[in-house]
Image 1 (cartoon, one colour):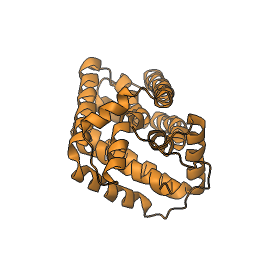
Image 2 (spheres, one colour):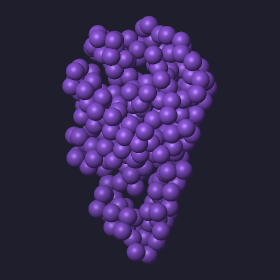
Image 3 (cartoon, one colour):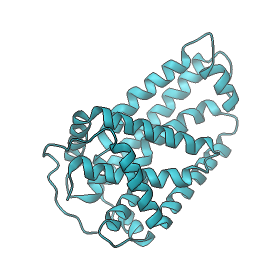
Image 4 (cartoon, helix red, strand yellow):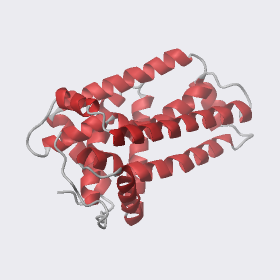
Length: 253
């Protein structure tokens, strides 16, 4: 895999409020130009979601954290699609062979980052499960129970607490990874340099990247709400769009 050295510690670019929609349009264009790698990723992640559903059965108190925690680890699971976008923008659209080559490369930086995201995701699953089982006014076995006893519960602030704690965990993870993971795929920088560049990009563009985080959550939620079938499209489009976000935020060559 060809890598080039960039200068991640340079000042990040400033983007406008319309940048998230621009990234989505570019991501959709990449997906349409070379759909197979994206569809493979989307189908595999949707199937994994169905395996979780079948394995958990009526334990939705656990699934609520697992599916929301999916947003934490998803960026590392779609690193191959960053390589696809990178190649498509040079006029040479690669296939699954190049994606598999990236995974087989055993890049220690991506492995370490993936482990950190997995730890964060696991911590949220445990926290979410503990909140729901201890503070819910009734057992939560299915999505209807979650809606009635957590989201719409008139006698507690459980849902607000659940969202607050989830946001407190997700915000630093998003700030650490929004630029860092594509940068690790694209360059030879260290994990610390990539995370530093990511935080600087967020600090420079808090509102556009806040909107981008909201867009990611909404599209991922839409994909899950369609019996996970929507993930087949939303996951690759968001991954490709994230590549373009990285390029614009870092003014990558």
